[in-house]
Length: 212
Image (cartoon, rainbow, N blue to C red; front, top):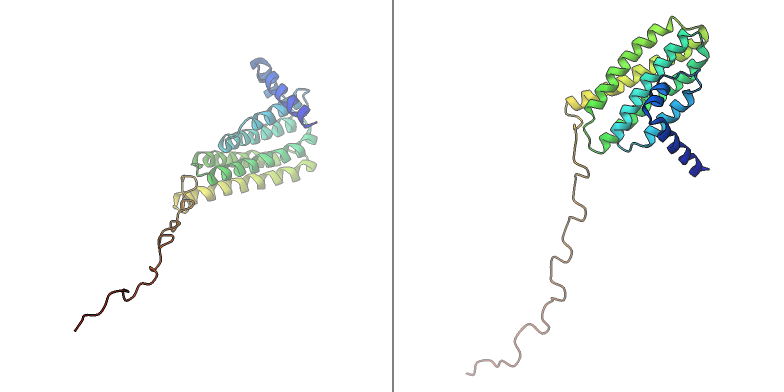
């Protein structure tokens, strides 16, 4: 089943890579038949990336896309889609910061990615706050929760940026810096192996005293 699913994702990725179809699916909304293909494409794009900073950028972009979809669904009078879209938005904000943390642990310079998250989440808070007064009552808890998520994401990014600027965290560091592995007292250094006090060392034997 896993192999089949992997092949399916790969096939979707190849099919959706054509420009015409890719542009069409990128504009698909949750009530559009192509929307599932759009989300499969996003999943495939994430799986195709191994660099945590590239993944952080994708998560940041996807979070923005989820909010655009929320706005569209509210405008179309379809608030039933809001809850699931907000959940996905929250996952992407958290995912962006998690990938940035991975990159930082590798000694990478994460400043640019942090600025992107900070700028995006600040805008997200403004968009969501504006939406809060436009959605029906059943959608307001999800919007309120998303506002808190965007604020927390921005605060996390700002906190790390401030620590970097104060010198509390390095901008980037070589990997595995520290005491080189195996460095210490060299093995076998000291008294050479097999060397000990010669046997019988003391007053030489066979040497007579001075004859008087």
